[in-house]
Length: 250
Image 1 (tube, rainbow, N blue to C red):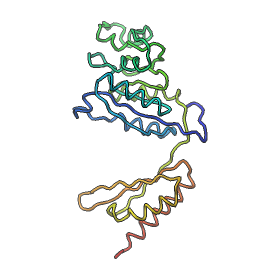
Image 2 (image 1 turned 180 degrees about the vertical axis):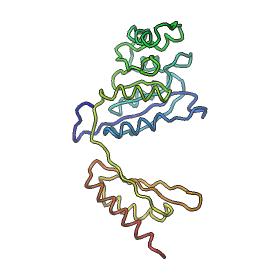
Image 3 (image 1 turned 120 degrees about the vertical axis):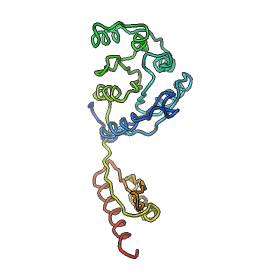
Image 4 (image 1 turned 30 degrees about the horizontal axis):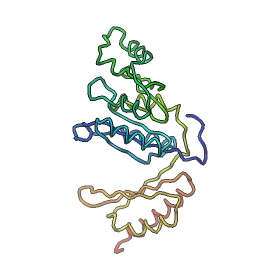
């Protein structure tokens, strides 16, 4: 990774593009993967949006996110079909032209030397002017990077390959560490103690996530911080609260 600044917060927004996501036909797994990947290198994802294959909505979302965050990562809409309009929308957002990029064509020909690059396939070689390519080790057709926006495929395996390829380009921040405490009780029972712990540990994020195991309600408590000593202190406080509340007749 590139140099990281010890006190600098590096932030990101994720834009998921596609009618199929909003209709429920395709389940979005990419945003969760990106969040985990970025968290490991100290980049904090602060917003995730999903928009349909509508140019104006893509432009509006890209403009808002790139103004607000260090990086924007988009997935979807850069394939060979008529409704793959992400590249055109990104070009519009940046006010630049778009055309077939010979660098992209070369990558595709290298991957498929004997394939016929039809007009449909060549749609995947249309890149906004001034953009850098994101190589695609899975199927050849690249994504691209322009300004602080990284445009990637929607197919999870291809997106993951592209994310690995751009990792070295990213400015990283301080890693956020986390610990998980399992509480054998409903969320409501632990809510008041957690509120007090959160107030006493302002540099630690504390989240509670209830679930049902088939017979009883349980709560998973996650504490997160960039400071390992503060994380440890908050974790100990949560564990003590859980232990007290699990004493019989409490």
